[in-house]
Image 1 (cartoon, one colour):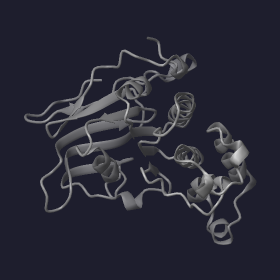
Image 2 (cartoon, rainbow, N blue to C red):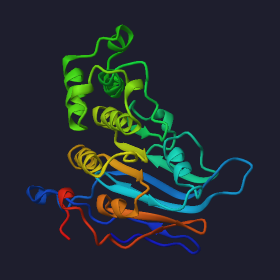
Image 3 (cartoon, one colour):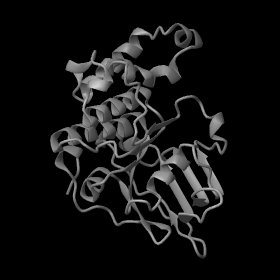
Image 4 (cartoon, helix red, strand yellow):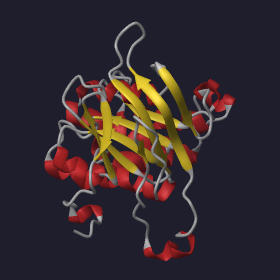
Length: 268
């Protein structure tokens, strides 16, 4: 899907994302625009911008990976997309809204490197926290989640392979297990935009592939747009529809990855 290019900046537009064959009737419909950045510089106020003139569109069901050396701006970009760090210049829109505080609760999910888990609470409790944006005010006030929410939490914990630790405090888990809890929380939340910073870190190969499958299911089945950072370029290429590289203060798109993990449904 071509996108116009302006002098001095590049516009990064999406390729078609993978869709099940039985959805061919929808193939001619443009997927929902989730994220748009127009002329955005990212960084911190009073400092030189880390990345300049980002022009990016991302759509429902896409999985986008960010590559680059440490300190180049990957996490800062995720924090900007989450509304935690304002753009230095330019416009950021999520679901057509430039004021992210006006988005429906739970529209944006964020898995930071520090995870943000409640360590003295159980695995199940932390997964259930993902349902809070969908809870009514009285359910939140009285801490009375619905049966559907509880089941969603159980299903998510099972999906990341932690069923046997459902009642264990998070503080007793390994670093890799805690990352899986954070992913389970996001599976329950079902955000429209999920930002994941090294969520597959500290996981062995088998577990990381299983968790990656769950992330893809979230994207494909619930039309979530996922933007992620992973320390493995090969895994990023295997998991993502598009890979964006940070180079000399710019964001540049890779060619489509040639390696696809069979369990992720790749054709190559």
